[in-house]
Length: 453
Image (cartoon, rainbow, N blue to C red; front, side, top):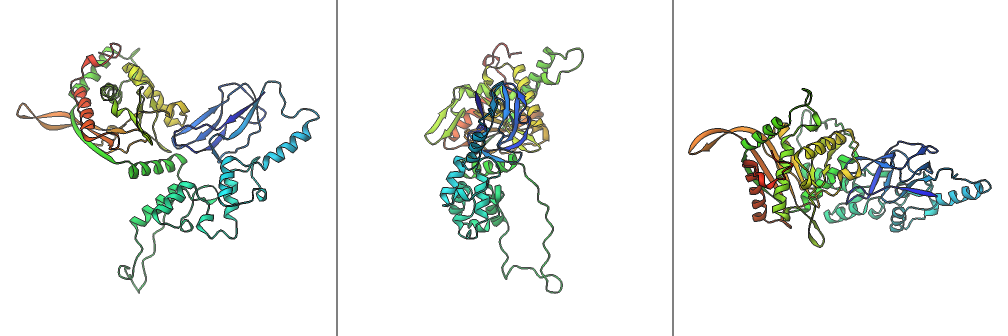
């Protein structure tokens, strides 16, 4: 029995995935659950596991290929099964040749949009891919109309909305296709660098304009590029508003010290994966607050507000390739040490580029902590389709009044960004007030006995 290896969707808005490398080769024996290939999405680099025991065969995508979600990229032959049976080799080869002319659904749609002849194309792989259509389109002599410029549907829509010509935008996609990020980048450049006019050109020396400085262009990862696209989309389409609250962190500090006293290091050596951080404590506090304010544990969609029954906390983590948000699932059912353990494992996998599809899925609320970078306060951009994100600054000593007298206290600034379509100012303020109350006077009654000190 032949089992298809399909490129899965690792995110709610993912359309494609980029092949990073194959971990197995054609003809190699594989076991169910064994990693086969690494793919890169907008969230992270993830490993796709074998769906069955058998032999890997018919790999149709190479490293660097951008593959539509749902496409078959290889097959697994059952143990003992051969791809080409004796006497049927020629038929199979003919079938493969026919298959090489069979376009993927996405390639068919793009070709139909531009009235292209699929039979005239020469695919690089076994099937006609999106990249094959875009390259063919780019090589056409009559590609002068903006409609014939290779571009994603979203890029066309953004260009039309902003009154821009696709022919004037340099594409960064396969075959030079214009992506939505290219349109947004062109808009940013146009807004930041207006064209010089006769009245504002500076003349230097012997009537010569100054030479433009040399520019080094960074090669962006797919994670960074799509992160830029998603954050721009969130910032420009979601009506953000922010609420700021300064919190006395004295009790938070003592809570952490108390945990460390009750959970001493083993054999005199502190176990890194068991170390409780302020982020872990704040995850516990946020979970308790979300239970009291379920409107903040929600997602916005076309139908309105979808309240989530489970609480899955995303943690913004900076890695070399960009920003990823691994998720602590069912955080409301975890004890403090379990939260610390999961956070440690997720951050380690994120930094190694080994996050699994489950690690980055189904988050309902996100926390972004920049306190370790000595940042006092900041506004975070909402991780759509979630409706809020909490930004955490560092704990720093400040002069504050206490009983009418100036005192020095450890203070921390919390900034809550909300989607005004789902959360109004009053609800957001009540939620932030609950977080502040729990941080300043952690009420043991709101936590499970397993997590309490």
